[in-house]
Length: 383
Ligand SMILES: NC(=O)c1ccc[n+]([C@@H]2O[C@H](COP(=O)([O-])OP(=O)(O)OC[C@H]3O[C@@H](n4cnc5c(N)ncnc54)[C@H](O)[C@@H]3O)[C@@H](O)[C@H]2O)c1
Ligand SMILES: O=C(O)C(=O)C[C@@H](O)[C@H](O)[C@H](O)COP(=O)(O)O
Ligand SMILES: [Zn+2]
Image 1 (tube, rainbow, N blue to C red):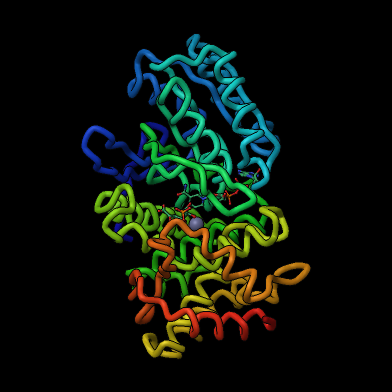
Image 2: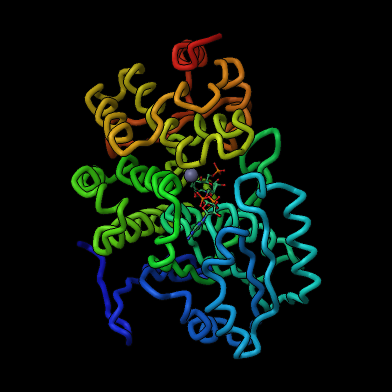
């Protein structure tokens, strides 16, 4: 295991990963029992701040109490905003409710919003924090596997609109990420699998050894074996931190690699109405398989690699084809219309993260739209 583990005072393991971004640098702390002791860390980090927690109706009853009590004891707790769970909360209406409630609680410029939840809460509360009084502090306390390995790191915040995914948002880096592995114990199995898709993504982008390791250890990662879970979360966070450090605002193309599978996946999520019909991790599992299959058709990627990726997702129980979507998927035409909203589009030209094989992702701006249309007609099983 590559990450350095250190025993904290109560002999729990934890590892800290720095994200080095000049004045916006912060740490990702991954370990056990972190939420209960969060108040102490926060006091060291932002000594003058008070805290308002944004969470959802699933997470708050399970995981808010200890942290809230700690903060209350020190007179640092401003209050909580609890929204409905699920992707549908990443919308203007919920953003408005969250912002207004945070203002009513008296969150000031020097105060801090804590995002306690999955990626939906991280993106929504992060966005609210970035626009409230033109920007207040943010601490990410991710409670889903997906949020611990991806969404809590890197500063992308936002909401969805009917036009597409994450089309309204900001870059707003957190001051700290506290990924408490214990809280994953209450996460439903379907959500664990969805988070696993983003873990596999790091292997597929540029780390074939990690993909290999996941091939041997996926059961332990999914079932929550502490050593393997920690290794998977820490490897993912290190990989994401390195890319974000290189290209914080997705300008050079390096960060776009984190979008492997997402141009297809986001279009599928929009088609499914940003609902439980298709979770983000499920959509990007299908999207990554499509990116590999299209790369194979373009004679960029060995067919064995594309087959291996699909077999791995099939084996773990993630969807791997458009017709796996509950209720059916979009037509090729609908897919292309939704993909055209992707934020990587420049001068109307679609860009895709393609691959030369496992670990060989790259950003391709020269997409042959006839080839892509033919590919999608076959994948969608329709015009
Ligand atoms: N900002 C980024 O860089 C980034 C990266 C990846 C994904 N995302 C976004 O993240 C979102 C997906 O995140 P997600 O998969 O965490 O979804 P989510 O926030 O909807 O959480 C998944 C479900 O699990 C529940 N939950 C969360 N933690 C729990 C726990 N410990 N115990 C019990 N239930 C728990 C939630 O209430 C929800 O029902 C998408 O909107 C996606 O676009 C953002
Ligand atoms: O952090 C990034 O950069 C990513 O692309 C990570 C993705 O997993 C994540 O889903 C992100 O929200 C997608 O970003 P978007 O800019 O395509 O909306
Ligand atoms: Zn994603």
